[in-house]
Image (cartoon, rainbow, N blue to C red; front, side, top):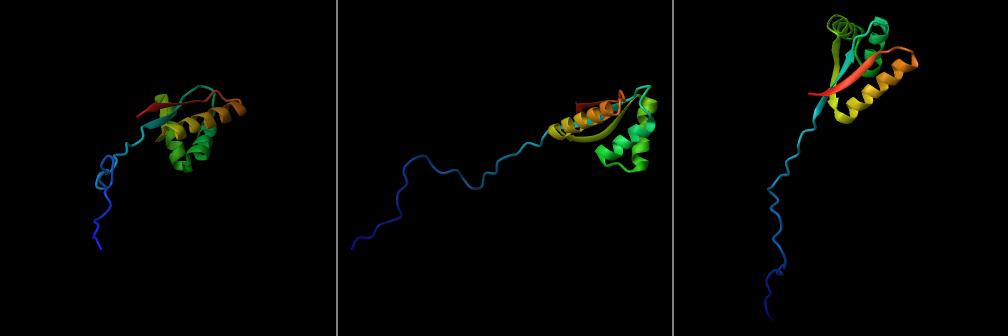
Length: 107
């Protein structure tokens, strides 16, 4: 009887199992509400509560910042989530006949 060793593998060498792929963190986007002279403050607070899960106090603080400075940050999200939030806010504002503007910008 003859002894045989392990089977010989033909082809390129296998990649080392010690190499970990580096995953890139997704870009983040700020969702911003812009001030206007027509949208009621209560509606802005309602939008912040409904779409950004802010409590009354946090929503009021953001709304006042928008009122005094012209713009305010609602949150920071990945691209797809930020885009969805902007669309939801804009659709909701139009449905209620308010000119509220919501935009996103890369952080």
